[in-house]
Length: 114
Image (tube, rainbow, N blue to C red; front, side, top):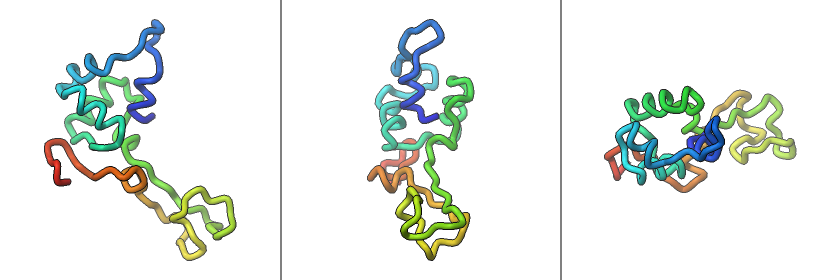
């Protein structure tokens, strides 16, 4: 589950999740939580482990990366959802699409130049 979607789901008691409280629990700023939610920044290893722990495993490192796998019949007129899959794409080819499509950068924590 994406982190932004996790924040949109209510707590078991029906209350809303608080980004500032969550940020404090994983030792980052609320602005960093917003950057994580909007794919503007990827958490580093320690933060990712903290996010997985604090979300009870509902958000994992894999949720920060969107991947498309081309099906065996990746034909130009097929129902392939990714423009990366073409008739020339080998079956099973995987594309990293998360930050490329969103226009973000592949920044890691504390490294504004990627």
